[in-house]
Length: 495
Image 1 (cartoon, rainbow, N blue to C red):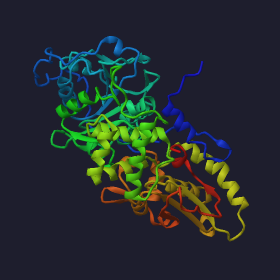
Image 2 (cartoon, rainbow, N blue to C red; image 1 turned 135 degrees about the vertical axis):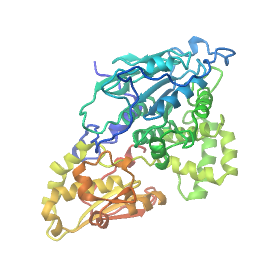
Image 3 (cartoon, one colour; image 1 turned 90 degrees about the vertical axis):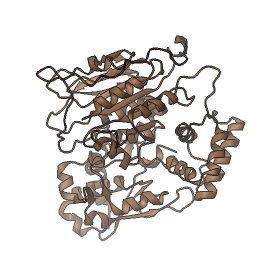
Image 4 (cartoon, helix red, strand yellow; image 1 turned 45 degrees about the vertical axis):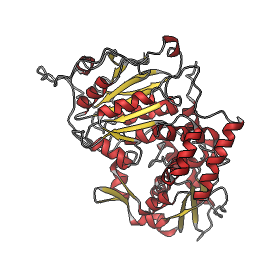
């Protein structure tokens, strides 16, 4: 019997049908380079004992949920990514948590692939929750802690943790991104991602995916991080809701675990937003839509209701509010929050060469047909609406140049990228991206089409000059004409 896909996973599958013939590319990601970072794991000799923490709290405890309010009900899953220095931070976070948050905690720690891990034993001293090293096919329960074993990649599917061996030991290992992506697809708005101390940038793309699904995201602050590379990368990418030290992250997680939007709630509690078509809720949404329309000129009335609901509720969790009326009063008094909500609605989540098989089909099927049908001297025009920060359009441009080879110089090409966000358009025009955004770019493409600029990578001038970016509201502005190809993947998924 085929495995049931989560609603979030089905939405992603539906978004891949923008290619002619309804091709559905498989999700995959190319790895870039290698990373050399300290690893936490068992040494060949007995490791030094970690600094002692006070005994894990036993009493008094907060009010404990009755078992029948937890078992069988959806519950939040917290994914924690860490590398160098992350063990100490997670141990401190665990020590501050009670044993009955109603959440499950999954630690994805960069580990030495050649040694047995002692994390389970060491972390058990910091919490009264059961701490278990994951085995393939293990189910996940609330009020438990799960630890990834060495030399594996882990995902969650239908409430079960799945392990596989590292595909290529020489390739860059990104276990945090891998787990966070699966967590976002599985849990949607109940996903919570935390990035603790570590070098490099693993976890940034995964945290973006969690935020896109309406989940909540954390990063350890610089002052308490032994290494700020991983949390700093996520903060710089703009995908973090809370930047806090470990003990403060624990306090926020405990609060969120009881929030009706994310956590396990009692039957007497109601979700913060009503179902579509419920009168009072429609009136509240109309108020919010009116405020956004007056501030930005954009009408979100016909935007996908489930997406709108997730984004509003997400902002309510961030600001510690449990009713829509409270939030309406808040945004009425805080113009900055109205702007943040507007940006949250737009969901700026995109990648270079997202779903590589789609670009392979472009080069094998679509581009040959377009070039064959083109009249001599005719300009080849391609449009990507909802282009966000430009990765999708630049990826298509690179794939096209690779296909054309030496013939590219003799063919006039115009590439158009439009988006409703002026901020995104400015970033797309600059074409400058952090290394964490280039996971899907092969080393060969990186050498040929990018140049290093102040620690980042910029699309080279040849590709940038092919691409024209402009602000456009698809709801009221006219489309482009005489097009050979339109890529709507970033738009259709949310309509």
